[in-house]
Image 1 (cartoon, rainbow, N blue to C red):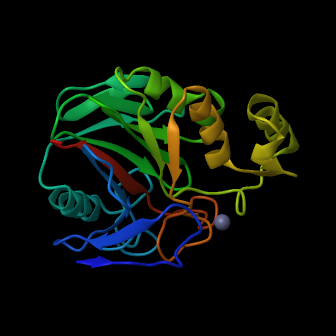
Image 2: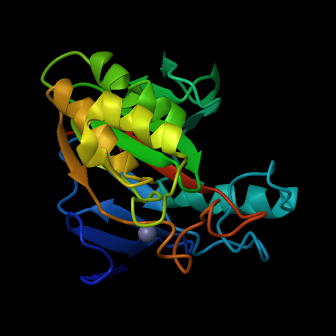
Length: 253
Ligand SMILES: [Zn+2]
């Protein structure tokens, strides 16, 4: 089932899909060649408030059985392929994986394997999918990772022609006010265009980081803070909320 939501956002075109098991996800339109990119929303899972519904984290206090069911629903939505995940530590570590399972502490995964799903969990932090000639990557980029250029570092680990980046749902400048000190640090690193007063645009900063690496960026323009009906937002739904999964799978061309 596919539905178009032309007024969902002001970014690049997206399609909202509802998978057979009910999971609702957003993907770039057109879909990238050589990969499936799936930014899951909070819709289509079994968790109860405040984790409703497609929460993938047990660490936030949700029922483990509900989270397990949600992960099973997502597993079906990505076609039943094996998944690789990391313990996200808000650093700039990039790990290369070749099989499913836990891949240690890192905030970005890269693979050249077809049919292997790379995952990160987010609720405001920026999920960045990179699709290259032979590799795909999935990046978790919070403010720390963004400031240390994790997306550019991940792109640098992908041989061949420069990858294309897809920036998924995240908290955007409209909803993200930071300290003066942090705003200044970002302006110093990425230019004044990434801040407006104390409002920080992580997508703009990531665009700057990837631009230096020669990577073309497709920003889906979706704000987790503006759309609590669709996304978990750590900032806007305090004190507790869920985490959404962002996934990329390399597929045959
Ligand atoms: Zn917003």
